[in-house]
Length: 240
Image (tube, rainbow, N blue to C red; front, side, top):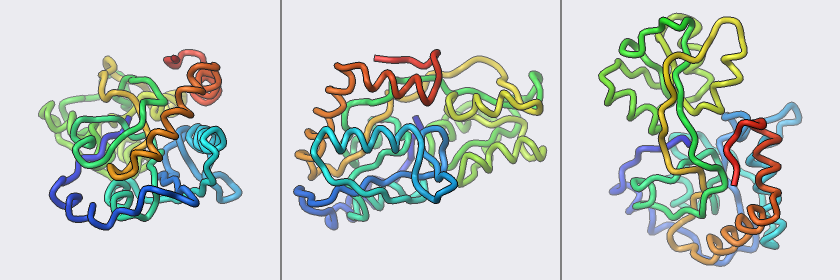
């Protein structure tokens, strides 16, 4: 879903620091600030759809896994640098990213991005907020609207509420819970972006990617992935 725009030249240098392919403990990197995909619960632990999914994938792949949180704007560079071994953070599979890292197959099907505003007359060609480094930010810039970027999704919502932005553009499943609140609503039509969500893996870690791919396939085959999708995103979510 969210799509980081990064310099491949910088990452190519960082790639020399990547870790070896074998893992005694696999560290899963996530943002921890993008509910319901991932968030920090009241106990201070990573929670959400991707926490439950990641734990199940590790169990099926017979991997010992630990969770690491990292800010979104540096999540790919820190994977390449070896700070963790896989990204599971609502990250859409894109051609641009695939030039820098590898991906597993998707564990979340492609879905729409939407605008959220304070009224149904919100100016989508005015000032539109988006999380920095996402494909939604790139799309807004191409529409001719004034792009206002923020480090986190919560800050983009706040920008609409305080009148700093006319609307926010982000993943539908991130924004819809806010549309249930009295002061915000979906504006205009949805925009299909991205090619589904997968785990990001260093290009040198083909063995880890294969193990996770096998685990994802098994969850698709037995229906347990669909059960998780419905649990966290509701009956209307696309399934496999």
